[in-house]
Image 1 (tube, helix red, strand yellow):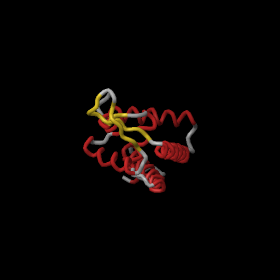
Image 2 (tube, helix red, strand yellow):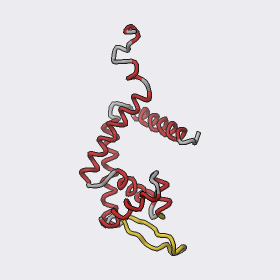
Image 3 (tube, one colour):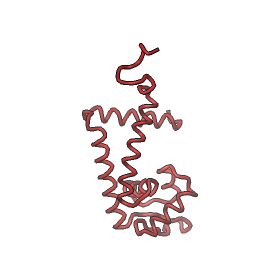
Image 4 (cartoon, one colour):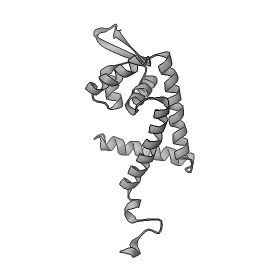
Length: 151
């Protein structure tokens, strides 16, 4: 039914899922380019930024925060410890547990990651007024939360 076509494109291209998927691909591609320039993987970046924001954490809690299976987190943490970006110490309150924290080089890298992420957000959302940006973030957060069974 060509008479029902949106003049700016095909009807399916205006569906929320299509739009979110397409924008998500663009965002991920830009983020991957930034991370490649900083020599970190997406999972390493999430771990580093979580430690930068939350401070020292146990490995189990860190894996929960970044949405990584705890078994898979081991190799990520090992790579970051090996690169000198994260330190691992015995938890004084529970000697069986290890606490992870950023090292000085790790903190410097997190500053670059945060700045790059903010710059990408600004570039992507440049056409939107500030109030619309906040509305978009809130709505996307609501959809994400609901999709995980939280609402």
